[in-house]
Image (cartoon, rainbow, N blue to C red; front, top):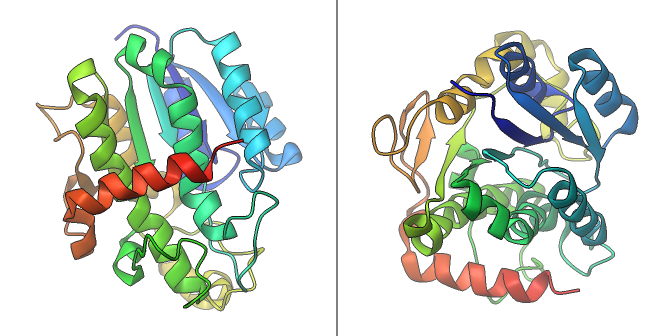
Length: 272
């Protein structure tokens, strides 16, 4: 296998960092993207890798990240949209979007679409980290800022459902141009996920129950399988996976018109 350029967001910790270590050890050029400057630099220094700092709660930073990546890497083999998180109380970003929806969906949507010509020329894989929490979500195209009905868990689930819908629509729009894409549930992984959230879920991740969770290396397994496998042979482009197998998602995840509507609305919401 020739050396590949693999961009991983949310790679300063958890499964992103675990995947970066494995891929770097195998000889790939791994590009680390993270929100925390300290943690991102630490992983990059450990792997002797390039890194970029970006807070997905500000779309201007995402645009700059895309521009910097385009300037540095005219060829990208894999874009792993792994960054995300659960918040707490409803909050709007500086861009006017509900924060959970922006961090989990709109920011990776913007990053991917800003890089699309590079990704198409590279016949790249786009891998989106979703979650079984998509089952708790409900996507309402008329209420993407969750004004009418909000809870931290529902907002997170809707963000992860959006990742799955984005994956299928990306495949529909660009599959015939060589793009392959998949989303996946990594499992319940023992990381710092939710640690800075005011959501009640943070207590689950810091309780004694955390000892029964997967390690980051175990959580990264399906991500690495998708990155190293071949669409059409090992997995189906546009589909949702868990434990290296097709997984059942929220029934809304199979609504092609909803996926198209989400794309069109997302284009409007990320306009500068």
